[in-house]
Image (cartoon, rainbow, N blue to C red; front, side, top):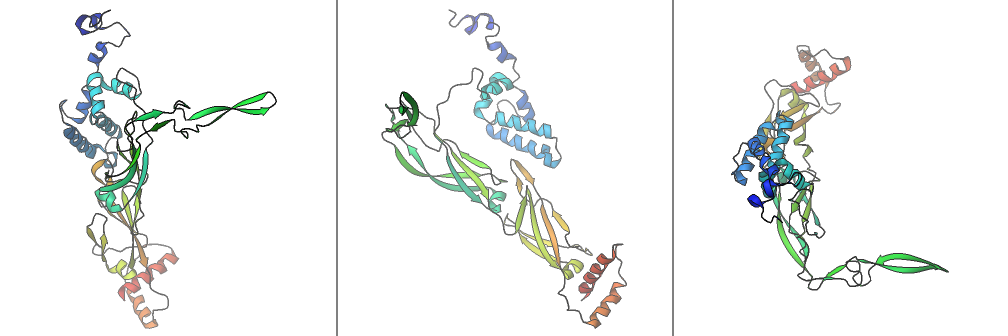
Length: 359
């Protein structure tokens, strides 16, 4: 037996098909570093900074190339993960893929995990804009000694014979009456109440999940469990969320639509925005004003923010509030104004708008 062999392994670098060290030496272990523009000894912080810098430039929402952005994400996914980075540095992309699929020499059997603890947390648009730290309280099971049920041998079920009729017997599976279906028991098991802080990333949306790895149940023979937090963004009374954009509905009077307006918006960021019409600007019913950069952050891409979309609803005067004398004076002003060439019914509507503006 060649234990140690020549040059520390199988003679001459291993036999064909035996997965010797030759494949690892030929693997490309530099490309992902080049994609992010960092050296092979870059720290985790440097890799993260390089990723976000490139993501801002190449994000598809900013006109970047989608394939290039995917390559940047892949590089960050590998180099930003300590275990994956170690595999990549030895075996390249193929090694990472084999390890991820359970193949290759890097794969190893993992201990079972207890069931996840599932929680929910409600967020406001302010949480979405700024990110948040949410204290989460929950109970976990803890124990140090495990006992396998002697009745079901850890299966949680037993089989019994049921008499169906003369000479007819059927096997029926049932929950183990001794361990009540658990299969194992813990002599010193206890329930402990704990509180952990969950970091909510900017740009989160309903349906996203945050995982507290290893903070769940702690039982012998198992890896520490996880806590999964389901995120729910509450509806805001003033804004509707459309992806990373915020939609805001604003009512203005006919006078403001024709003669100018100014109003303030309390933004989820905490900033008070002042919105003004341009000199001579006329706002038509249903008009849309876009304020760039005042939507919500794009999750996973720092400095990429949506827009604030303001939809205007123009309030017309109450019917029957125009005396004949005022109506005549308004008609004189209307004759001097220029209108788009529109249908007859729309023209009447525009005329009413101008009249009220003058009043």
